[in-house]
Image (cartoon, rainbow, N blue to C red; front, side, top):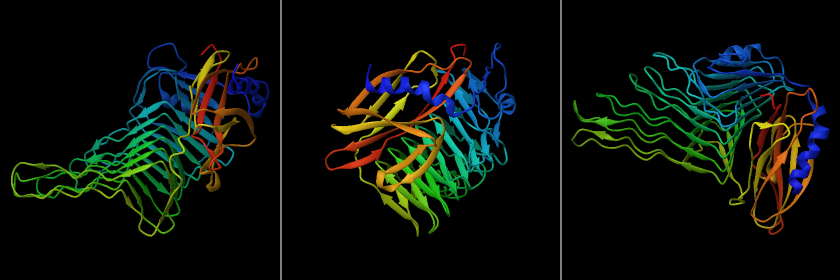
Length: 414
């Protein structure tokens, strides 16, 4: 048994007393589950429940308002939600986790909402292994994800892209927009939507990968922020130039800031030219537009990582993987609730709520792959576990935090 396995076995003895026992509601678009519609299951869930979604396609919109909830796809499931996900009005002690869901949003011929909207949440919101994809709308460019008035948002291995408009002249939607919020990205891909191309008008610019507005902070580790492609130009009825590519990252206000580590910012490509003639293509978008805001590039190439398979079954092993510079010493911090608080001296945010604990793992020779087993106490149907490694690199000396991971442990009956 490895040190990491011993640590996780001990967790099952002590940490289950930290939160109340949650119910588990199942959703399936085929018969046999508690609910056939995801929105009805979410509305029926009580504070702290788990909604487990089976493989399938769901067309309803989901709103999680004012309660803690874990919304998670079954292991190996392909869960596609054709409506949007809205998370709002969380109190400071509440938290929401969404894991393994692909949300495409409901495309409206007029004003389409973003596939993911997080607003007015004092508590932590955790988005992991999700895909947020805006499509094409008739009369507005749709943003992929919008976060407003929410200071503790974590996104892990999540992809989000903006959409575009067909009939109106608008720049592409943003992959992610922040308004009076703090968002912490780990191993994510954010891409702006393509600009629109009109027969009689020049193509419009592609959207920003990430737009950080006033009173907002972005942390990004191991992520890619890519501007959208410019809109089409052409010479079918005279000459119209194509649009510029969008910026990878834009800061629109002096109170906007960002801290980046091992994160690439890429401008979008210019739009294509249809037909023949002397139409001019647009320009490649800028990687960054800081304006009066500030961007801090942190020490690069620490090559750290952490991942754990979720959901897991009580009494059965699940995989955990760590990566760090050769010779680094590792600990694993763990908690039953999430948080997000940026610590510049540790090159990242702590993502664990209180109470939390720290257990030693040992020296990591580049990577460590192992498994762990947690057994739930009798009568407990589920347990959320939030993990983050702490690494000490001996030379040059540096303590830093890893990508976090979330695991939901389920009773074998699920």
